Amino acid sequence: KKGKMFPLPDKNPVGIDIGAHSAKLVKFKGSEGAFSLEEAVCLNLPKGGADLAGEIAGLIAGAVKSRRLSGRYAATVVPQGQMISRHIYLPVMPDKDLKEAVRWELRKDLPFPADELLADYVRAGSGVKTAENNISIIAFAARRSEVERLICALKDAGLDLRLVEAAPTAMLSSFDLAYEWDEGANSAMLDIGVNQST
Picture 1: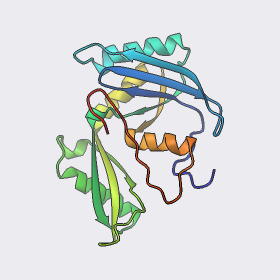
Picture 2: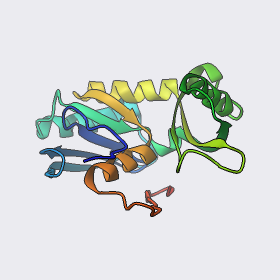
Picture 3: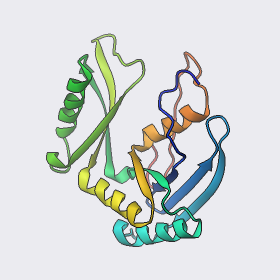
């Protein structure tokens, strides 16, 4: 379809969402316009938190093995408690400079050392705040060691992790793939979790 915001993946990955109380795995088959759900698994996590590299990886590994998903491409989102998001406005500038400017803005109030920062961003709305001619940016930050722990846990579970995404942009991508955007209309997405909603 024309006007899609996000590119289609080359293969349909196993999607994994690790929440505060459960981990969800889904697998689709088909192609754009004709997807169907092939697998869906919800794993209850131990109360009081669980070790990502141990208990959670073991639970996911068991589900992967029982559903014969081993070796499949996988995509996941950074758990909400490990991600920081900010809405910022920056002057119009080349993309290379914009990337560094976003990182600079995120460094201002990080709860971890700046050298651990992993950052990404998307332009919001039309991309320009007309009154001041600034770019509207939604920026995301995560701690490198936390993301690496997530990657290792899913690799240990037998999955070939190819994509780590922020939950809000993953939701946008899913909507973008499945539906048409209504021209001139504003849309809102709500992610309802056990501990927090976004």
